[in-house]
Image (tube, rainbow, N blue to C red; front, top):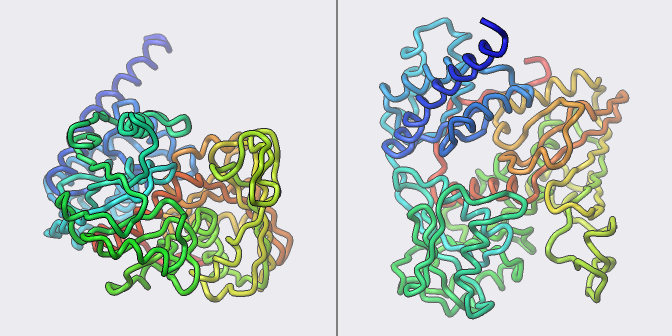
Length: 482
Protein backbone atom coordinates (compact mmCIF):
# COMPACT_ATOMS: atom_id res chain seq x y z
CA UNK A 1 0.00 0.00 0.00
CA UNK A 2 1.44 3.40 -0.98
CA UNK A 3 1.64 6.36 1.41
CA UNK A 4 -1.31 8.15 -0.17
CA UNK A 5 -3.62 5.17 0.26
CA UNK A 6 -2.35 4.58 3.80
CA UNK A 7 -3.05 8.17 4.85
CA UNK A 8 -6.48 8.02 3.24
CA UNK A 9 -7.36 4.83 5.08
CA UNK A 10 -6.11 6.30 8.34
CA UNK A 11 -8.31 9.36 7.89
CA UNK A 12 -11.36 7.24 7.07
CA UNK A 13 -10.76 5.18 10.20
CA UNK A 14 -10.68 8.38 12.26
CA UNK A 15 -13.88 9.58 10.61
CA UNK A 16 -15.64 6.32 11.44
CA UNK A 17 -14.62 6.61 15.10
CA UNK A 18 -15.82 10.22 15.27
CA UNK A 19 -19.13 9.34 13.60
CA UNK A 20 -19.77 6.73 16.30
CA UNK A 21 -19.24 9.37 18.99
CA UNK A 22 -21.91 11.80 17.76
CA UNK A 23 -25.05 9.87 18.86
CA UNK A 24 -23.40 9.04 22.21
CA UNK A 25 -22.60 12.70 22.90
CA UNK A 26 -26.11 13.77 21.93
CA UNK A 27 -27.98 11.11 23.92
CA UNK A 28 -25.93 11.77 27.08
CA UNK A 29 -26.92 15.42 26.89
CA UNK A 30 -30.59 14.95 25.99
CA UNK A 31 -31.33 12.06 28.35
CA UNK A 32 -29.11 12.84 31.33
CA UNK A 33 -28.05 16.50 30.96
CA UNK A 34 -24.42 15.41 30.70
CA UNK A 35 -22.09 17.85 28.95
CA UNK A 36 -18.93 16.26 27.58
CA UNK A 37 -15.72 18.06 26.70
CA UNK A 38 -12.04 17.58 25.98
CA UNK A 39 -10.03 19.82 28.30
CA UNK A 40 -12.88 22.31 28.33
CA UNK A 41 -13.67 22.15 24.60
CA UNK A 42 -17.29 21.05 24.26
CA UNK A 43 -18.14 18.06 22.08
CA UNK A 44 -21.90 18.61 21.85
CA UNK A 45 -23.09 19.63 18.39
CA UNK A 46 -19.79 19.02 16.64
CA UNK A 47 -19.65 17.39 13.21
CA UNK A 48 -17.39 14.46 12.39
CA UNK A 49 -14.60 16.77 11.28
CA UNK A 50 -15.31 19.03 14.25
CA UNK A 51 -14.62 16.16 16.66
CA UNK A 52 -11.39 15.36 14.82
CA UNK A 53 -10.42 19.02 14.88
CA UNK A 54 -10.94 19.39 18.63
CA UNK A 55 -8.78 16.31 19.27
CA UNK A 56 -6.05 17.94 17.24
CA UNK A 57 -6.58 21.32 18.84
CA UNK A 58 -6.18 20.13 22.42
CA UNK A 59 -2.94 18.46 21.40
CA UNK A 60 -1.71 21.72 19.87
CA UNK A 61 -2.59 23.54 23.10
CA UNK A 62 -0.09 21.37 24.96
CA UNK A 63 -2.44 18.81 26.48
CA UNK A 64 -0.90 15.76 24.79
CA UNK A 65 -2.24 13.58 21.99
CA UNK A 66 -5.60 11.98 22.74
CA UNK A 67 -6.56 8.73 21.06
CA UNK A 68 -9.93 8.69 19.31
CA UNK A 69 -10.29 5.05 20.33
CA UNK A 70 -9.89 5.98 24.00
CA UNK A 71 -12.42 8.82 23.70
CA UNK A 72 -14.97 6.48 22.11
CA UNK A 73 -14.40 3.83 24.79
CA UNK A 74 -15.13 6.32 27.58
CA UNK A 75 -18.26 7.63 25.82
CA UNK A 76 -19.58 4.10 25.35
CA UNK A 77 -18.91 3.31 29.02
CA UNK A 78 -20.69 6.51 30.06
CA UNK A 79 -23.75 5.43 28.12
CA UNK A 80 -23.82 2.17 30.06
CA UNK A 81 -23.21 3.79 33.47
CA UNK A 82 -25.73 6.62 32.91
CA UNK A 83 -24.42 9.40 35.16
CA UNK A 84 -26.75 12.25 36.13
CA UNK A 85 -26.47 15.96 35.33
CA UNK A 86 -22.78 16.83 35.19
CA UNK A 87 -19.95 18.31 33.17
CA UNK A 88 -17.49 15.57 32.27
CA UNK A 89 -14.02 16.07 30.83
CA UNK A 90 -13.51 12.97 28.72
CA UNK A 91 -9.84 13.72 28.12
CA UNK A 92 -9.12 13.82 31.84
CA UNK A 93 -11.13 10.62 32.34
CA UNK A 94 -8.96 8.93 29.69
CA UNK A 95 -5.79 10.15 31.40
CA UNK A 96 -7.02 9.12 34.85
CA UNK A 97 -7.99 5.67 33.68
CA UNK A 98 -4.61 5.12 32.02
CA UNK A 99 -2.86 6.10 35.25
CA UNK A 100 -5.11 3.93 37.43
CA UNK A 101 -4.58 0.62 35.63
CA UNK A 102 -8.12 -0.35 36.66
CA UNK A 103 -11.00 -1.66 34.58
CA UNK A 104 -12.55 1.26 32.68
CA UNK A 105 -16.11 0.79 33.94
CA UNK A 106 -14.98 0.31 37.54
CA UNK A 107 -12.76 3.40 37.33
CA UNK A 108 -15.56 5.54 35.89
CA UNK A 109 -18.09 4.39 38.50
CA UNK A 110 -15.70 5.40 41.26
CA UNK A 111 -14.68 8.76 39.79
CA UNK A 112 -18.20 9.70 38.69
CA UNK A 113 -19.89 8.68 41.95
CA UNK A 114 -20.96 12.30 42.71
CA UNK A 115 -22.86 12.43 39.41
CA UNK A 116 -24.51 9.02 39.46
CA UNK A 117 -28.15 9.58 40.37
CA UNK A 118 -27.75 13.38 40.32
CA UNK A 119 -31.12 15.01 39.67
CA UNK A 120 -31.76 17.58 36.99
CA UNK A 121 -31.81 21.16 38.20
CA UNK A 122 -35.15 22.97 37.96
CA UNK A 123 -35.24 25.28 34.93
CA UNK A 124 -34.65 28.97 35.67
CA UNK A 125 -35.97 31.70 33.36
CA UNK A 126 -33.32 34.01 31.90
CA UNK A 127 -33.99 37.40 30.30
CA UNK A 128 -31.34 39.29 28.36
CA UNK A 129 -31.83 43.03 28.79
CA UNK A 130 -29.96 44.31 25.74
CA UNK A 131 -28.93 42.27 22.72
CA UNK A 132 -25.56 43.59 21.63
CA UNK A 133 -22.19 41.83 21.34
CA UNK A 134 -22.34 40.14 24.75
CA UNK A 135 -26.10 39.61 24.73
CA UNK A 136 -26.07 37.68 21.47
CA UNK A 137 -23.12 35.52 22.55
CA UNK A 138 -24.89 34.75 25.83
CA UNK A 139 -27.91 33.68 23.79
CA UNK A 140 -25.74 31.37 21.68
CA UNK A 141 -24.12 29.79 24.73
CA UNK A 142 -27.33 29.33 26.72
CA UNK A 143 -29.12 27.79 23.73
CA UNK A 144 -26.16 25.46 23.12
CA UNK A 145 -26.30 24.41 26.80
CA UNK A 146 -29.98 23.47 26.57
CA UNK A 147 -30.04 19.71 27.02
CA UNK A 148 -32.54 17.78 29.10
CA UNK A 149 -34.59 20.89 29.87
CA UNK A 150 -32.87 21.76 33.14
CA UNK A 151 -30.67 24.68 34.09
CA UNK A 152 -30.83 28.01 32.31
CA UNK A 153 -33.83 28.64 30.06
CA UNK A 154 -33.60 31.67 27.78
CA UNK A 155 -37.08 33.17 27.65
CA UNK A 156 -36.81 36.73 26.37
CA UNK A 157 -34.71 39.66 25.26
CA UNK A 158 -35.60 43.28 25.99
CA UNK A 159 -34.54 45.97 23.53
CA UNK A 160 -35.53 49.37 22.26
CA UNK A 161 -37.21 49.21 18.86
CA UNK A 162 -34.68 50.27 16.28
CA UNK A 163 -36.58 49.96 13.01
CA UNK A 164 -39.82 48.79 11.45
CA UNK A 165 -38.23 45.43 10.63
CA UNK A 166 -36.46 45.29 14.01
CA UNK A 167 -37.30 41.64 14.72
CA UNK A 168 -35.88 40.36 11.44
CA UNK A 169 -32.71 42.40 11.83
CA UNK A 170 -32.08 41.13 15.37
CA UNK A 171 -32.63 37.54 14.29
CA UNK A 172 -30.17 38.07 11.44
CA UNK A 173 -27.54 39.41 13.85
CA UNK A 174 -27.98 36.30 16.00
CA UNK A 175 -27.61 34.09 12.94
CA UNK A 176 -24.57 35.80 11.40
CA UNK A 177 -21.56 37.21 13.20
CA UNK A 178 -18.51 38.65 11.46
CA UNK A 179 -16.19 37.54 14.27
CA UNK A 180 -17.69 34.34 15.62
CA UNK A 181 -19.25 32.94 12.46
CA UNK A 182 -22.74 31.61 11.83
CA UNK A 183 -25.01 30.42 14.60
CA UNK A 184 -24.73 26.64 15.00
CA UNK A 185 -28.24 25.73 13.95
CA UNK A 186 -31.35 27.45 12.66
CA UNK A 187 -32.84 30.86 13.44
CA UNK A 188 -36.41 31.70 12.44
CA UNK A 189 -38.81 34.56 13.16
CA UNK A 190 -42.42 34.41 14.37
CA UNK A 191 -43.49 37.97 13.61
CA UNK A 192 -47.07 37.47 14.79
CA UNK A 193 -45.90 36.63 18.32
CA UNK A 194 -42.75 38.79 18.20
CA UNK A 195 -40.47 35.83 18.80
CA UNK A 196 -37.11 34.58 17.56
CA UNK A 197 -36.90 30.79 17.35
CA UNK A 198 -33.34 29.44 17.64
CA UNK A 199 -32.84 25.66 17.62
CA UNK A 200 -36.36 25.22 18.97
CA UNK A 201 -35.94 27.82 21.73
CA UNK A 202 -38.66 30.48 21.52
CA UNK A 203 -37.25 33.82 22.59
CA UNK A 204 -39.81 36.52 23.28
CA UNK A 205 -38.71 39.93 22.00
CA UNK A 206 -39.99 42.68 24.31
CA UNK A 207 -39.67 46.34 23.43
CA UNK A 208 -39.19 48.74 26.31
CA UNK A 209 -37.25 51.87 27.29
CA UNK A 210 -37.72 51.37 31.02
CA UNK A 211 -36.89 48.11 32.84
CA UNK A 212 -39.36 48.86 35.64
CA UNK A 213 -42.39 48.87 33.31
CA UNK A 214 -41.95 45.38 31.80
CA UNK A 215 -44.46 42.73 32.87
CA UNK A 216 -42.65 39.45 32.31
CA UNK A 217 -45.50 37.44 33.79
CA UNK A 218 -47.61 38.40 30.78
CA UNK A 219 -45.30 36.14 28.78
CA UNK A 220 -45.30 33.31 31.32
CA UNK A 221 -41.91 34.34 32.74
CA UNK A 222 -41.51 34.07 36.50
CA UNK A 223 -38.68 34.56 39.03
CA UNK A 224 -36.34 35.43 36.17
CA UNK A 225 -32.72 36.42 36.34
CA UNK A 226 -32.33 39.60 34.29
CA UNK A 227 -28.94 39.91 32.61
CA UNK A 228 -28.27 43.58 31.94
CA UNK A 229 -25.93 43.83 28.95
CA UNK A 230 -26.49 47.50 28.27
CA UNK A 231 -24.02 48.99 30.75
CA UNK A 232 -26.48 51.85 31.12
CA UNK A 233 -26.82 51.28 34.88
CA UNK A 234 -23.84 50.19 36.96
CA UNK A 235 -24.94 50.83 40.55
CA UNK A 236 -27.54 49.29 42.83
CA UNK A 237 -29.96 52.21 42.50
CA UNK A 238 -30.09 52.03 38.70
CA UNK A 239 -30.11 48.24 38.44
CA UNK A 240 -32.83 47.97 41.08
CA UNK A 241 -35.28 49.26 38.47
CA UNK A 242 -35.19 45.76 36.98
CA UNK A 243 -36.53 44.34 40.22
CA UNK A 244 -39.63 46.55 39.98
CA UNK A 245 -40.73 44.56 36.93
CA UNK A 246 -43.28 41.79 37.46
CA UNK A 247 -41.62 38.38 37.12
CA UNK A 248 -38.06 39.59 37.79
CA UNK A 249 -36.21 38.11 40.77
CA UNK A 250 -32.49 38.86 40.43
CA UNK A 251 -30.11 40.89 38.25
CA UNK A 252 -26.67 40.13 36.81
CA UNK A 253 -24.68 43.01 35.33
CA UNK A 254 -22.19 42.23 32.54
CA UNK A 255 -19.89 45.11 33.46
CA UNK A 256 -17.97 46.20 36.56
CA UNK A 257 -20.42 47.15 39.29
CA UNK A 258 -20.10 50.32 41.32
CA UNK A 259 -20.56 50.91 45.02
CA UNK A 260 -21.09 47.88 47.23
CA UNK A 261 -22.18 45.50 44.47
CA UNK A 262 -20.38 42.15 44.49
CA UNK A 263 -18.07 41.84 41.48
CA UNK A 264 -17.87 38.13 40.74
CA UNK A 265 -15.12 36.35 38.81
CA UNK A 266 -16.17 32.73 38.45
CA UNK A 267 -13.58 30.38 39.89
CA UNK A 268 -12.36 33.05 42.29
CA UNK A 269 -15.20 34.35 44.44
CA UNK A 270 -18.42 32.88 43.03
CA UNK A 271 -18.75 31.06 46.37
CA UNK A 272 -19.66 34.44 47.91
CA UNK A 273 -22.94 34.64 45.98
CA UNK A 274 -25.79 34.20 48.44
CA UNK A 275 -29.44 33.44 47.84
CA UNK A 276 -30.47 36.88 49.06
CA UNK A 277 -28.10 38.73 46.70
CA UNK A 278 -30.56 40.40 44.37
CA UNK A 279 -27.98 42.19 42.20
CA UNK A 280 -24.42 41.09 41.36
CA UNK A 281 -21.85 42.00 38.72
CA UNK A 282 -19.78 39.67 36.53
CA UNK A 283 -16.96 42.27 36.50
CA UNK A 284 -15.17 43.02 33.20
CA UNK A 285 -13.60 40.84 30.52
CA UNK A 286 -10.09 41.95 31.52
CA UNK A 287 -10.71 41.38 35.23
CA UNK A 288 -11.95 37.87 34.42
CA UNK A 289 -8.91 37.20 32.25
CA UNK A 290 -6.21 38.28 34.69
CA UNK A 291 -7.61 37.53 38.15
CA UNK A 292 -7.35 33.71 37.91
CA UNK A 293 -3.73 33.93 36.68
CA UNK A 294 -2.86 36.44 39.39
CA UNK A 295 -4.42 34.21 42.05
CA UNK A 296 -2.40 31.21 40.85
CA UNK A 297 0.82 33.22 40.88
CA UNK A 298 0.09 34.76 44.27
CA UNK A 299 -0.59 31.35 45.82
CA UNK A 300 2.68 29.90 44.55
CA UNK A 301 5.09 32.83 44.62
CA UNK A 302 3.45 35.76 46.41
CA UNK A 303 2.89 39.04 44.55
CA UNK A 304 4.57 42.13 45.99
CA UNK A 305 3.32 44.54 43.34
CA UNK A 306 2.51 44.58 39.65
CA UNK A 307 1.39 46.53 36.59
CA UNK A 308 -1.19 45.31 34.08
CA UNK A 309 -1.01 46.61 30.51
CA UNK A 310 -3.94 45.53 28.34
CA UNK A 311 -3.74 45.57 24.56
CA UNK A 312 -7.47 45.56 23.94
CA UNK A 313 -9.52 45.19 20.78
CA UNK A 314 -11.71 48.16 19.98
CA UNK A 315 -15.28 48.14 21.23
CA UNK A 316 -18.59 49.64 20.22
CA UNK A 317 -18.15 52.72 22.41
CA UNK A 318 -15.41 54.02 20.09
CA UNK A 319 -15.91 55.83 16.79
CA UNK A 320 -15.26 54.15 13.44
CA UNK A 321 -13.97 57.46 12.05
CA UNK A 322 -12.95 60.66 13.80
CA UNK A 323 -15.94 62.31 15.42
CA UNK A 324 -17.02 63.87 18.69
CA UNK A 325 -16.85 61.58 21.73
CA UNK A 326 -17.27 62.60 25.35
CA UNK A 327 -14.37 60.31 26.36
CA UNK A 328 -10.73 61.29 25.97
CA UNK A 329 -9.16 60.02 22.70
CA UNK A 330 -12.08 57.67 21.97
CA UNK A 331 -13.38 60.06 19.32
CA UNK A 332 -10.48 59.10 17.05
CA UNK A 333 -10.96 56.30 14.54
CA UNK A 334 -10.89 52.90 16.26
CA UNK A 335 -9.96 51.08 13.05
CA UNK A 336 -7.01 53.33 12.21
CA UNK A 337 -5.38 54.08 15.53
CA UNK A 338 -3.90 52.67 18.68
CA UNK A 339 -5.67 54.59 21.42
CA UNK A 340 -4.41 54.99 24.97
CA UNK A 341 -7.34 54.39 27.30
CA UNK A 342 -8.09 54.03 30.97
CA UNK A 343 -8.87 50.69 32.60
CA UNK A 344 -10.11 49.93 36.06
CA UNK A 345 -9.26 46.24 35.72
CA UNK A 346 -6.22 46.34 38.00
CA UNK A 347 -8.17 47.95 40.84
CA UNK A 348 -11.15 45.72 40.11
CA UNK A 349 -9.03 42.61 40.74
CA UNK A 350 -9.07 43.51 44.44
CA UNK A 351 -12.89 43.36 44.45
CA UNK A 352 -12.63 39.63 43.73
CA UNK A 353 -9.18 39.03 45.27
CA UNK A 354 -8.82 41.32 48.32
CA UNK A 355 -5.29 40.11 49.11
CA UNK A 356 -4.05 42.05 46.07
CA UNK A 357 -5.64 45.34 47.13
CA UNK A 358 -3.27 48.25 46.51
CA UNK A 359 -0.66 46.09 44.81
CA UNK A 360 -1.62 46.59 41.15
CA UNK A 361 -1.73 49.45 38.67
CA UNK A 362 -3.13 49.28 35.16
CA UNK A 363 -3.34 50.95 31.77
CA UNK A 364 -4.78 50.06 28.38
CA UNK A 365 -4.23 50.52 24.67
CA UNK A 366 -7.15 50.01 22.28
CA UNK A 367 -5.95 48.54 18.98
CA UNK A 368 -7.56 48.06 15.52
CA UNK A 369 -8.73 44.45 15.93
CA UNK A 370 -12.39 43.47 16.48
CA UNK A 371 -11.86 40.76 19.12
CA UNK A 372 -9.26 39.03 21.33
CA UNK A 373 -7.09 41.08 23.64
CA UNK A 374 -3.79 40.62 25.44
CA UNK A 375 -2.90 41.39 29.05
CA UNK A 376 0.76 41.88 29.89
CA UNK A 377 1.41 41.29 33.60
CA UNK A 378 4.60 42.83 35.02
CA UNK A 379 4.96 41.31 38.50
CA UNK A 380 7.43 41.55 41.37
CA UNK A 381 7.32 38.35 43.43
CA UNK A 382 8.20 37.41 47.01
CA UNK A 383 9.92 34.21 45.85
CA UNK A 384 12.32 33.58 43.00
CA UNK A 385 11.05 32.08 39.75
CA UNK A 386 12.54 30.61 36.61
CA UNK A 387 10.77 30.58 33.27
CA UNK A 388 10.62 26.78 33.08
CA UNK A 389 9.38 26.41 36.65
CA UNK A 390 6.76 29.14 36.27
CA UNK A 391 5.49 27.81 32.95
CA UNK A 392 5.32 24.23 34.22
CA UNK A 393 3.29 25.38 37.19
CA UNK A 394 0.82 27.36 35.07
CA UNK A 395 0.51 24.50 32.59
CA UNK A 396 -0.44 22.13 35.43
CA UNK A 397 -2.84 24.71 36.85
CA UNK A 398 -4.58 24.84 33.46
CA UNK A 399 -4.91 21.06 33.35
CA UNK A 400 -5.69 19.96 36.88
CA UNK A 401 -6.52 22.79 39.27
CA UNK A 402 -9.73 24.39 40.45
CA UNK A 403 -8.97 27.19 37.93
CA UNK A 404 -8.80 24.97 34.86
CA UNK A 405 -12.13 26.35 33.55
CA UNK A 406 -10.61 29.82 33.69
CA UNK A 407 -6.95 29.36 32.68
CA UNK A 408 -5.56 27.77 29.55
CA UNK A 409 -1.92 27.45 28.54
CA UNK A 410 -0.19 27.28 25.18
CA UNK A 411 3.32 27.03 23.80
CA UNK A 412 3.55 27.79 20.10
CA UNK A 413 5.80 30.15 18.15
CA UNK A 414 3.06 30.74 15.57
CA UNK A 415 -0.10 31.72 17.50
CA UNK A 416 -1.62 35.17 17.02
CA UNK A 417 -4.76 36.83 18.34
CA UNK A 418 -7.27 35.30 15.92
CA UNK A 419 -6.26 31.81 17.08
CA UNK A 420 -8.07 32.53 20.34
CA UNK A 421 -11.43 33.61 18.91
CA UNK A 422 -14.04 31.41 20.55
CA UNK A 423 -11.90 30.33 23.51
CA UNK A 424 -14.05 29.12 26.42
CA UNK A 425 -11.39 30.08 28.96
CA UNK A 426 -11.15 33.46 30.64
CA UNK A 427 -7.44 33.75 29.77
CA UNK A 428 -4.71 31.80 27.98
CA UNK A 429 -1.11 32.03 29.18
CA UNK A 430 1.39 32.26 26.29
CA UNK A 431 4.25 30.21 27.73
CA UNK A 432 6.85 31.07 25.09
CA UNK A 433 6.45 34.76 25.85
CA UNK A 434 7.06 34.36 29.60
CA UNK A 435 10.00 36.32 31.02
CA UNK A 436 11.43 35.46 34.44
CA UNK A 437 14.34 37.30 36.01
CA UNK A 438 14.69 36.18 39.60
CA UNK A 439 11.76 37.88 41.36
CA UNK A 440 10.65 39.96 38.36
CA UNK A 441 8.41 38.22 35.82
CA UNK A 442 6.36 39.19 32.78
CA UNK A 443 3.39 37.07 31.69
CA UNK A 444 1.36 37.40 28.50
CA UNK A 445 -2.30 36.38 28.78
CA UNK A 446 -4.55 36.23 25.70
CA UNK A 447 -8.31 36.45 26.11
CA UNK A 448 -11.36 36.51 23.89
CA UNK A 449 -12.87 39.61 25.44
CA UNK A 450 -16.26 38.69 23.95
CA UNK A 451 -16.72 34.91 23.97
CA UNK A 452 -14.40 33.96 26.82
CA UNK A 453 -16.00 36.61 28.99
CA UNK A 454 -19.50 35.47 28.00
CA UNK A 455 -18.62 31.93 29.11
CA UNK A 456 -17.64 33.34 32.51
CA UNK A 457 -20.96 35.22 32.69
CA UNK A 458 -22.88 32.00 31.99
CA UNK A 459 -20.94 30.23 34.75
CA UNK A 460 -21.97 32.98 37.19
CA UNK A 461 -25.56 32.66 35.96
CA UNK A 462 -25.47 28.92 36.66
CA UNK A 463 -24.30 29.59 40.22
CA UNK A 464 -27.06 32.17 40.76
CA UNK A 465 -29.62 29.72 39.37
CA UNK A 466 -28.29 26.79 41.39
CA UNK A 467 -27.77 25.03 38.07
CA UNK A 468 -23.97 24.83 37.81
CA UNK A 469 -23.31 21.13 37.14
CA UNK A 470 -20.84 19.07 39.11
CA UNK A 471 -17.52 19.12 37.20
CA UNK A 472 -15.70 15.79 37.05
CA UNK A 473 -13.09 14.44 37.49
CA UNK A 474 -12.65 16.38 40.72
CA UNK A 475 -9.97 19.01 40.38
CA UNK A 476 -6.99 18.79 42.69
CA UNK A 477 -4.84 21.43 44.28
CA UNK A 478 -1.73 22.27 42.28
CA UNK A 479 1.45 23.55 43.93
CA UNK A 480 4.94 24.26 42.67
CA UNK A 481 6.08 20.88 43.93
CA UNK A 482 3.06 18.73 42.96
